[in-house]
Length: 89
Image 1 (cartoon, rainbow, N blue to C red):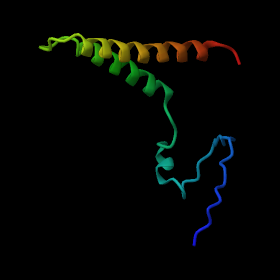
Image 2 (image 1 turned 180 degrees about the vertical axis):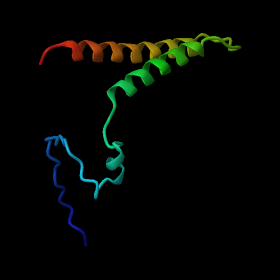
Image 3 (image 1 turned 120 degrees about the vertical axis):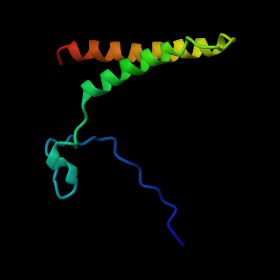
């Protein structure tokens, strides 16, 4: 029978500056990192697409509120990210 004890995960985060190409083959082509700029551009594009969905043949206004709310949340996250990025650490 398997043990029922659970090991709790540690809250520490490891920051890797070098990725071994044996473990991650795509690192040889430079594909192993996250691009903050790409995520920011994608966020703005998604917010604009959500607002473009307001134009349509729907009659109710509830979906308009959800579209505006989600777009506003994405914009708020993007603005907060840009403000935090400007602060000196």
